Image (tube, rainbow, N blue to C red):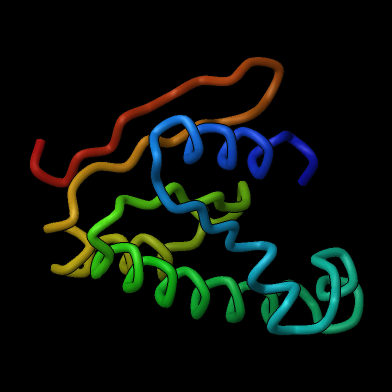
Length: 116
């Protein structure tokens, strides 16, 4: 949280003329709570369930969209094996590539391509 994924994602989407979706923002809207409140009140397992459901929904929409999508994902998203299965769905695989920014002391960009 707080590494700039929403700001960077919005700017990137605007520059490319793509859609932008922030998974955490959608989880907060759905739960009616902030991310830290979800962790505090419901626990990490409940958050991860919400995250997985939102990721699957967002990836489905992105795969079906004519306009490519920039998805902002939390750092723990890729640490969950069930979330990797969301990316392995045939419709997502056919949709193309993903550019992944890892935030830390520096921003590193990795290109993930299911076809490569």
